[in-house]
Amino acid sequence: MIIDLRTEAERSRNPRTSDIVINTPLPPLNQSQIADLKVALTEVARDIPDRPIKVFCAKGSRSRLATSILRDMGVEVVDLGGVR
Image 1 (cartoon, one colour):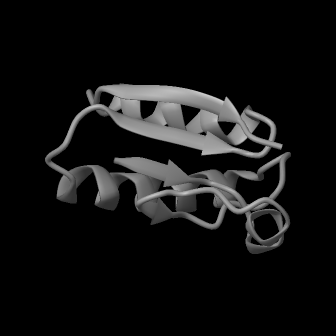
Image 2 (spheres, helix red, strand yellow):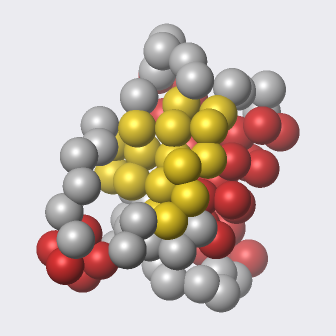
């Protein structure tokens, strides 16, 4: 399972294959945006039986954050970093 954490504009400039898209604003993320990402990742992780979950974004900072959130939930995750 691959999760794309890029914005719609980033995806349109550089299409990549993914199973799930979580529109995540460009960094730096405020506390509300981080909380929203945690909620979205919790819902995805609960519904995905396949492990590990792979995450990526445009430059790597959002994928690092998502990796940390998922690991804190006990989910096996692979950070694919950024795709430009």
